[in-house]
Image 1 (cartoon, rainbow, N blue to C red):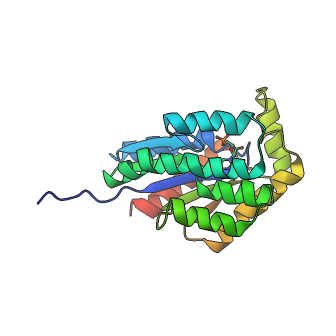
Image 2: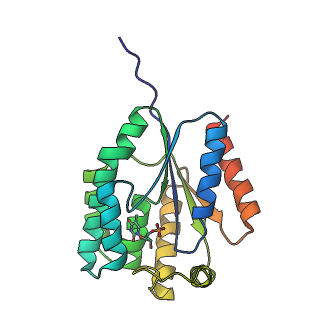
Image 3: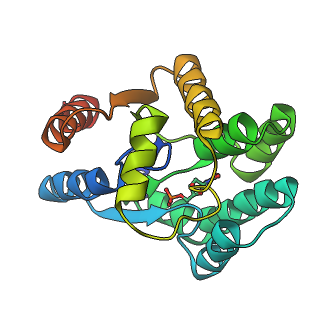
Length: 210
Ligand code: TMP
């Protein structure tokens, strides 16, 4: 009989636009690789050829809010089938920039859509699968907006939203963290990148390397 490898770990990064998570993802991937772990880095929406095409539409085409919500889960379904699931089954670790917490924060919190429908979609698309660890970058939306503006890039459909939208997204994220404190670690993203990196490294070591 061939022994199956242990399932890999699934780590996600979350937060409002401009919270600074992207620059920290590479540091976590490097930390895991230095420990000899086989890591796959990916993102949502996206992560597959089809998912990246859906991402283009989601970020730049105007659409009904429920279309947006279902496309997020459609991209996720593909991502799970083609990439996340097979990687975890082979024992690889997956580090993903956003996952379903983002849908609950943006589409339920920010857009105000009915939460119950999303519980159903989540149970349909990934029954029994949640990240092993979620790092939630928490930042005052005013500071986050200033960071987004300072990049000089054209804002996408989400980045063009007003402050109150991001206040609701932030609150929805924090509410999820309160409901799942073992899984979701809130990171104070108002600190220096060095301080944030050190605190994340501490969390990852404590959670997985002891
Ligand atoms: P990113 O710029 O962090 O890669 O994320 C793309 C945008 O998509 C970001 O503004 C958040 C948004 N988003 C949702 O609204 N719902 C979701 O489920 C996901 C994954 C992202």
